[in-house]
Length: 153
Length: 153
Image (cartoon, rainbow over all chains, first blue to last red):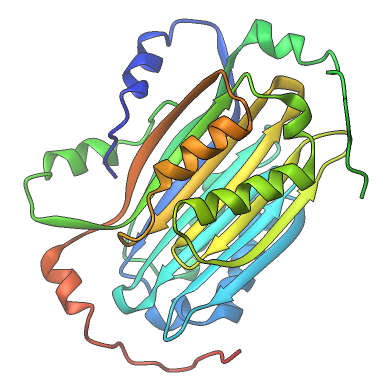
């Protein structure tokens, strides 16, 4: 995985500031997986749902799609953000995103679970902190914002 | 956004190898947005779908969820991967993922579109290359793999 953004260095230069992050994002690269599992939408969906439950997440919605001639894309929306997957069965590769917020879930548990289920012989992950804000701003967030219009449903 | 993976350095150390990437992943951080837009599921869904179309993607499925008391999570699955969003209206913040594969779509067009629609005064993005493989492997991918079982539908 190659970083091409310049904003990363800028953020690191300010790492001494008292900051918290709203979310944690694990970007997993699963190579050398079982291609037949990666091309089976039922199994991919089952394992993604189980991965969400394993790491302590609450499932809200899910949508999965089977591509022609092969490959599965799918997302599980959880109360704590989302889990997403795209598979390239012809390459034995799956790109998986495990995005959680709060301290209830550990996305790395989902990572280990899926690595095992996909039988990946060559897996790696990168963990990113999303929504980095300073503690002062975070405290301010306890104040409700003014709502002009709102959707109910 | 802070990188905590050690695999990044390992990859960079091998950057001279003739490699291609299957996907490109833009991780956008939209701060100082219009909170009322971020809390309106109809608008968030509309803009995410428009963003997908603007950057040349083909929409396959979508699912959006409104949280109580506020916040929207949603995903648009596209033929070229996915667009995902999580909003914290109380902080004026949205985390957006724009994951595309192939050369048809440019996720940065979607980034610019959403930045404008959310009226973000403080936005940044990181672009990652997903599914990095060497050209030799990629050529081998043209060979179909053996299917043991397959889901139709």
